[in-house]
Amino acid sequence: MTTLTNKIDFAVLISVKNANPNGDPLNGNRPRQNYDGHGEISDVAIKRKIRNRLIDMGESVFVQSNDKNVDGFKSLKDRADAEEELQKANKNKDIPLFSSLACEKWIDVRSFGQVFAFKNDVLSVGIRGPVSIHPAISVNPINITSTQITKSVNSVTGDKKGSDTMGMKHRVDFGLYVCYGSINTQLAEKTGFSDEDSEKVKQALSTLFENDASSARPDGSMEVSKVYWWEHTSKMGQYSSGKVHRSLKIEQTTDRPQSIDDFSITLEEFDNLSVEVIDGL
Image (cartoon, rainbow, N blue to C red; front, side, top):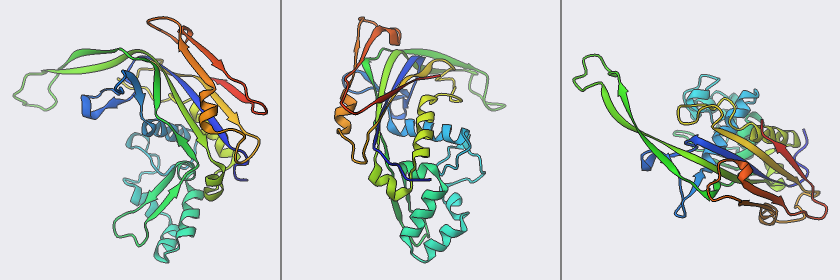
């Protein structure tokens, strides 16, 4: 595989209806909001979903969540220690070889980068990845509905507490979120991130919420509406990422939008820069 030949920028439109896209554990798991009332989905949460989709595609992923653990390792250190060549590079203090082997083995390492700093290891290795992703921010301020719920069964036999325990669930009534990102060719050359890898990331973005259903995010409550994929004609790119991202203009057309149809979406065209528009599944 050849490393990425041209700079890439992208944007993802995410529709949320009656779901909690990313709860804040420091705020009772309410959907994240900024000070202006706009909803947020953290970049970490988005990368987690990309990793999950890459696992579903059969790719080798280093940072696996417990519910997507496919190799049985219980920690990142265990997963790294299982690679004999990595351990040899670690003992020999060969940072370039260690980085090269880790990037070759795991697609998320060569995409997002990774810090390898574990107890009792000789080396501490930091890898910068070419794929950078912004938090997703809603176009319009979101309205959050909170519902009180009860648990009607005891968790433990003989528990003296009553079975009816109160709790809360929160959901976003509707929100259209936009996430921007870029893929840098200079960093791609260092990690070995290829054109084929970029196609896999594109596919993961367009199917971000497949196999992601939960009580907070029922099937159909969150979907990728569109992915905008700009591929430049050079390694450096003809335009800055900020300028490309700003070319996507989204404005709500009603006071209380209920779907993506309640927004006006336009694209500013640039000379010699084409954009691929992909509809979500």
